[in-house]
Length: 81
Image 1: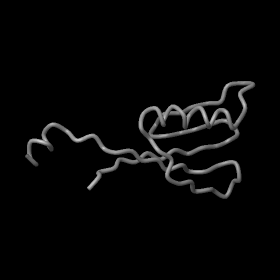
Image 2: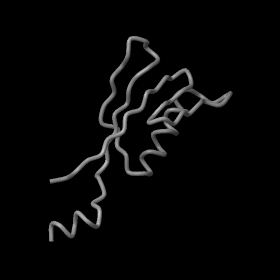
Image 3: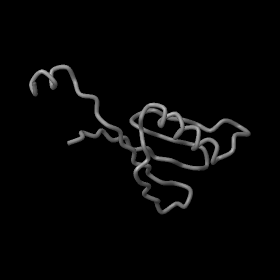
Image 4: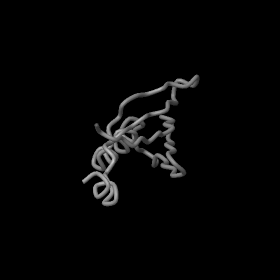
């Protein structure tokens, strides 16, 4: 059975993404959708997959939920084998 780890990001399409204490701010002239796509592309390179979105009362803001397979630690493999 696969073990997953999760990441939640607050996405404000007006120009701010916040996830686990890290802030990403849209640069002047950068398109809103390009800003968010670039963030998701980087997470995809790191193995994260977008699994859900929770729109907030403000139409420009949502929570994005991502997951990826958790890497097994060496200690966990030794305990299984």
